Length: 414
Image (cartoon, rainbow, N blue to C red; front, side, top):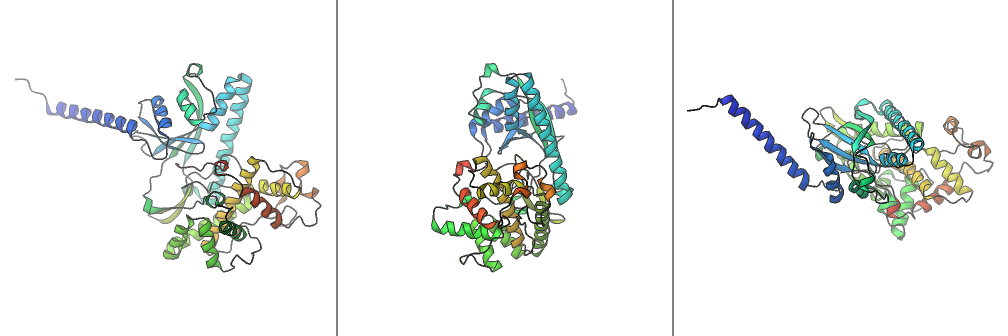
């Protein structure tokens, strides 16, 4: 009789188990489309993802596809492919070597910019708040279906595509946090959540902006801090949870005070806006050391600064037409300011981001060194140029007219 050693049987069983596990994961990958992802996009991407480490598309944001690899050596790593920057680079490549070289230089500058902004965030909020990540350009496979599902306006034929194209990839540590252990600090634009064509929403919209943009309060806007919290939590519905937690948990309130102070200082000193509209871009987590800030995906697709907002207000003073992209830039700057001041109000601290006219001595004019000659603050001779309230009100009227599909797409996965 022929005997098979137990060690061989055990090894064969383990390999068989591993094989079954791989097959199960592949079936799961093909059938179970993650929530919030278009099935057509998911399946077109998985066709080119390959089986090495079994990459799986787990999310899509305003500029990224997010992949998780079944790699036992790197179980907490995600790979984010910036499909917008990749599409721009691919288009330039089709236009010739010169355009491709310029596009690549532009992408390299953008990667350096992101790296600089990330270091800046670490300086203000600490290394623990900003996840470790690395930016790089890698050649990745592509197919026409994926491009069609991502950017329908591009007319691409599979036969015209190379097997691989250069793509901007961000490698980041994935942080899995139970829902009960985290609170998001985001706020969806009131321009999105309120119907400002209705009188009640319009009055609420005006009051929220008066409170959070440090404007003179109208007779309809309360000056009592607790009533003001009621108003902003109606304008920013998701801040209700933050307020309730701050009122019920003294340790959370202490942590929120610290974070709110940091956010105010960061925006007032740098002027830089953050993406505070996307869910879970900034969160508070309850870990072994207490409540702490995590900035999972805080940067906007492009740099937005309070300086841009002030320039837009100057344009309104001169009755210039505001292009859509300028409205979006202003909206992002305003939203960062509003959410930051809302968190400060909820945390019961006096610190606020304040929008100051460039002619005011309270603003560092070095921030305006990049302005064009016709935008230099000294060129403004209007006697009431320091009065920001009237042009802000005019800008808010412009922003309230934005349609839902004109607003920036918020990130859903980080």
